[in-house]
Amino acid sequence: MTEQQSAAVQTGECQRRWFVRAAAVVFSLVAFLLCRAEGWLLLYGDAVAHLHIARRITDSHYPGLHQLGSVWLPFSHLLLVPFVQRMDWWQSGFAGAIPSMLAYIAACMGIYRLARLWLDPASALFAFLFFALNPGLLYLETTAMTEPIFLCEIIWSALLLAEADRALNSSNARSAGWKILAAGLILVAAVYTRYDGWIFASLCWLLPAAWMLRRNTPRPPAWVFAVFTLLLIAAPAGWLLYNAKFFGDPLDFLRGPYSARAIELRTTPPGSNHYPGWHDMPLAFLYYRTAAALSCVPLWLSNVLFTITLAATALLGWRQRWCSAALVLLWFPLPFYAYSVAYGSVPIFMPQWRPNSYYNTRYGIELLPAFALAAAVALQFLIRQLRKKRTSWTKPAIAAAFALLIANNAALAWKRPLIFQEAVVNSSTRIPFETALANDLSRLPANARILMSLTDHVGAVQRAGLPLVRILNESDGKEFAAALASPATHAAYVVALDGDAVARAVAEHPGQLTPVDTICQRGQPCARIYRSDTALTQEFSPAR
Image 1 (cartoon, rainbow, N blue to C red):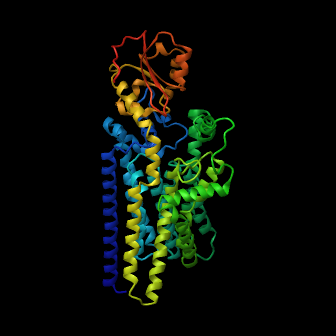
Image 2 (cartoon, rainbow, N blue to C red; image 1 turned 60 degrees about the horizontal axis):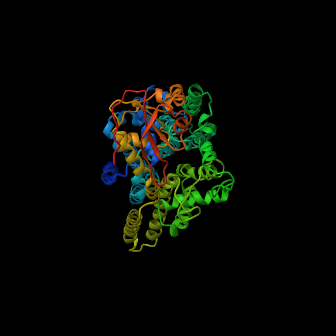
Image 3 (cartoon, helix red, strand yellow; image 1 turned 90 degrees about the horizontal axis):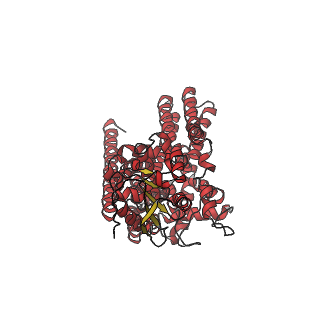
């Protein structure tokens, strides 16, 4: 290849990368504008909770990093902190969309670049569009959910490690070293984003470790591997130390009162059957695999997609070993979530199968990068077979593949993707309840102190636009415990939700509390508002 031809190739690739970047920005903005106009940014209760955690780091009686809590990992919350300072951004959910949209754009760029390591431009663009146009991901990237950020992290980690391996095979140990260190920093972020990242980081560590064991072939510098290893050890160790310092137990996130196991014990009625897949790995595997496939294709195509992905992974491993490792890494959610469903108190419910409801279907989106790359590998295999036969069907086949991809995603969007359906169904009673409660909370006297549990319905406070510093709640530690022992003397108003800690406190210490309103909503606990007779407050007229 001449210098002129090489320059032309580089120019063409640069233009394609600009197209990918611009298209990702457009897709992201269109999805955000639609979801914001429809009021969909806060459908997920977890998105509301993530925004709350980020807000209370600065807006609380005792601000500080301890407000991050012990269960959810902190990285996404720290990203949200600068944006939740604006009350209107917190109320609307826009604060949560900003990091997710940026992560989505970066992930789209990463998936294209990863695909180009072994695929032709047309097939790499197919992988990009398969990923970028997924309706479930386009919805999630407008919310404060952690999945878009985590997808960005795993894609770029796999990409950098694949490029490092390629650099080593080209005897460029220096370049490989810097890519390994960059991957290490991204993996630290992944460890602090989701617990899946702990397993993913461990798997990624195996690649440089294997390179260090090779003989008569280039290896990364020993100090690079040492720093990479220390980073991946220090990240989870830091979370254990944080839990030990602020919550008295390094494993509080695993066995504390707000852990997944504790929630399952509280919410599972005695003597009831466990969820499908409980202590049943094959069934757990089937549930997760199907949830993942349904995020990309209709149910009748789920087995086809999974088969193509397996075959493409095997084909890539046979032809290009150094690239196949990156694709194998992207398979890690499958065994991780199958084990989590079976033994980690993490159920997945789909409307197609028992118990015919929606829960945690969004976890399936983590296999989207593997599906996208595998589908592109399959397309390239088809193209090469057609070219070998010197037929005139090559270009029509490529056009048909792109048309089918767009039609499939359009159909999924029209019928509403599974991830979005879960958000709608599970918010159908919560949002009206929190809106009604927010109307009453907003009518309380200005600056009146309120005693209220924020564990389940902080969305009401968010919608009302009340600073969290006005709310005496669980994050206030000993002061909240003291308030439960004497509600009337610690707050001007008390909001008790049936069954919560404040409701029990009111039942035990009802003195000097006057009921002023009750808000009930089907499928939600009743909220009862009391005025303290010992506090000097203005009169309160409940909204009707």
